[in-house]
Picture 1: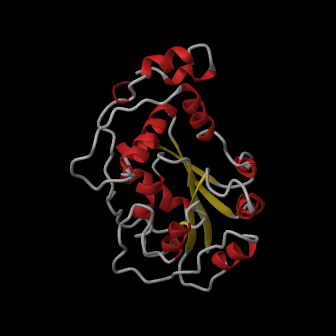
Picture 2: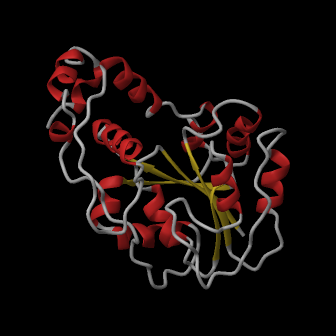
Picture 3: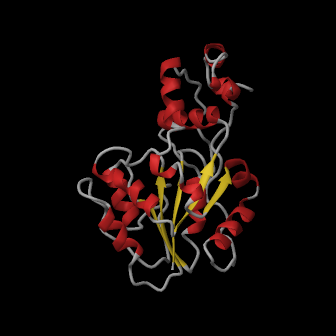
Length: 253
């Protein structure tokens, strides 16, 4: 049986991939078992929803108790990965900003110490787009959409808050910083996920040693309706503020 995780920073395409990963008949997939929110942990562990708020239908209930906020996660993951099921692959989704502190933070050590765990990793080179998407979602409380009208607010991000978000979106847990030399890693770019979803899913199935089969189309639609320089009201201020830093490369709109 193949063990794996789906990991990435927020707003880099993990949820749209999860919506199709879970549909593969040979695969048992859980959502954000280590979410910073207790209710999300519960629903994801029970496979009630998969992070985007959709209800799973016609799917066997392979729910497990949610991981506690206290205690070690090692026993929990041993139980998850060593469950006696007929699936060919078992995995879950985890974001790089989850379980960074406290008792559950040893989840990252567990992953780093188990090179048999395959890692599907998403990336999005434009941190400015990531931050705008992240802030917009917090403002509108709309993290995902399957279509229909969406609010298009303009907003201001003060430079100190923008810098904090930049650092948040580039801080990879220490044990994960060296997995490229110890684990099998499949990295998928956000742009490719958006433009060639079918091929990305085929790559995932091959990576997990599963039959290609039919790819479930993405359930989610891209939320962004404006470019960062259009929705970020103080874009020019930020561009000037960071012009002599390593972050200037993001202000190209």
